[in-house]
Image 1 (cartoon, rainbow, N blue to C red):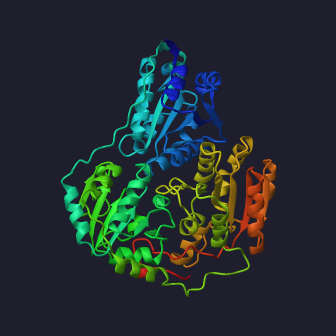
Image 2 (image 1 turned 90 degrees about the vertical axis):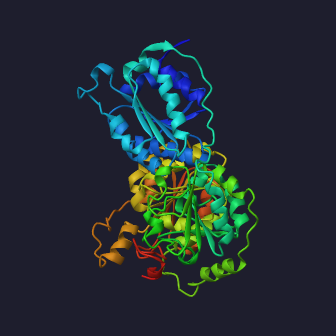
Length: 555
């Protein structure tokens, strides 16, 4: 059958199982949006306030479902506005397809109105970016984009489509979407060697990364951890991959991880990295990270092997396949003395008094949310102190229930991600923890919450400063608070009202449960101004490039 390019885009999206896209229209994208009008019974389009919000929403949709998120934009600034969202998805290995419009092919390269070479702009931060110059190539380009986004290490792909291509017609033949096969282990001879290291280990640990979730390997991972009886220390991206209540789950590792995760890393004799990158926020001093231990890396991306930390053995392949292979023929291991020692470390600083003042304490807010939410409910964050407090205190029992920007640390990410997750899971509640600094970067998306009546509960951890940067200035720059006290006078409750959203405020401990309970009962978007102290810090903290021996527990 003959279809226009715009119709082919819609047909290919349906073919790939896409029923929801996020975007913002514009002149160069008019043909595509006209087709979407006619396909509205099969494709739901979510209109955000800004293209960056759309890209983060597509990301949140993908993180919370495991499916590929889709963002549509027009040319020029519409395309460049999603660059940060693409970079965020890329470093965290999130599958996303971005379809951008461009000027007509005869206007390319002429500095035409709203023309930009988005293909070259995003090449370093995508798995692939491609300009479609013939309508006959459009369907293959979109199909390839979806295949690449989920093949191997997942990530974003961009397809740029000039306006005249969306108007031209060509024959279209439907195809079944590509079947994604597990990438088999490239070095199967390593399995026996790794198993022998596991048998010899007296003090093993597992360093869990976001690759576990990306591979949909949480069941296999849990079975493996239980078989080898090893404590699990989670990167920020791995939180939720193992239930927080599981006896082997120790918690967050790295700069703002617990004392116990640092000590495990310093005293273990075997580290098994599962889908993790040994980033600077975890490894600190990479030369000393686990220097006393044998290190094994389970990884799908060969470029990650020995990139940050030199390893003794590695298994290259899909993590699900690697974990399954390692359990075959391996007897159950037991390490009661090692696990008992870790329990002692967990209580090392029980006598250290927490920071207290007249303000509500961040951990009390998060623990109250833990009490009220269901295990399947979703926590989204922006970036800063609040993000680390959620990592430390948030109860994450199920996979894909934490939406947070790990590698890029994108302020402004949270609102879009919360929107995407709530659209994907209308039967769950989504709680967005943000700071007043991050919230000022994405508060325009409140209009999207209201327009679609998304019952996201936004908790603005409002200390009136740029908290994490200010904490670093306090610790490393002699308390010279340069540009971290912005003196903004935004009234978040009134702001919410201006968008037609209910605003509430928490100013003391007695407000916490009544306000949160009322917010949940509304089943509508709510903004809660949580007034916390500018002097409360995220602790413990291992300074950048340092080790557990230099941990900071008080400031």
